[in-house]
Length: 67
Image (cartoon, rainbow, N blue to C red; front, top):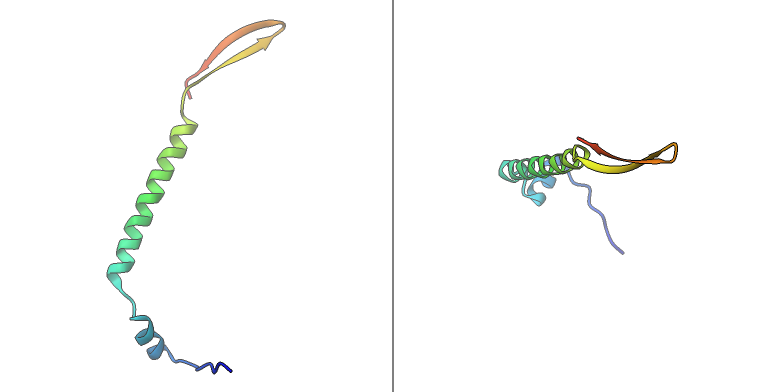
């Protein structure tokens, strides 16, 4: 049978090694970099120029969208 122990805040901090500011800052920086790269990729795809063939009243037109 597994016995569970109730831990107070101090014991939890000692077990987990406490709050590490360096790890937190590195995580924040890497997370921000991932966010920026993802944002640039998404905006790049949205604003990418493209060409489409449009048919109106039986006539085909080549339409270029600037993005």
